[in-house]
Image 1 (spheres, rainbow, N blue to C red):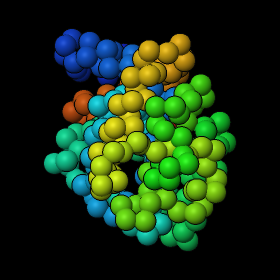
Image 2: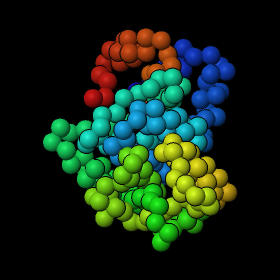
Image 3: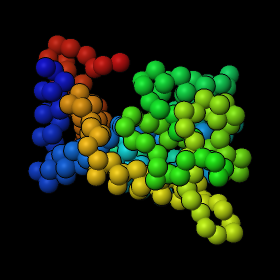
Length: 229
């Protein structure tokens, strides 16, 4: 298979230590949990969530941009953008939250909205039996009614102080820490499939290998084929 051969070819351009590290991290990656950010106003918050996703092994981050455009703060993200799949929903005609909802539902993900209501499920009780998309809303207003109405479940982080509010990136990190811990202790098949691992590894190599685009095009020309669109 040309795809496998291309990956092996690109792996020649990374050190044995880097290759071993990639294999180790890839074994702990998951698409069972995905994160969605809806209209995040502060770029550093969105980038901090991206960094948390990468640290906790969450491979897919979705960003809805109806009111506020997403921009990467590289100092905050600390290179996380090289290692995760970023999906952006930014049609100028708006309706991007609904487009994201449809995309995730078509792939069988349970939609989980993070909220503050005392009636919502505590985060530690969130069921992990099905793949899920965890939604976080804009800093002041939270999630839109579109998302809240479409959500399969609503969860909250129990709080015990007067403030009753975490910073967005702190909230995401707390949720992902709890979910990751429970996944690792469970029998849920959370690991990437062989096909997913191949796709993610190709992404990583494309970002890690100097002049990867040129190397890839040369390789594919020699094999009388062309890159995937």
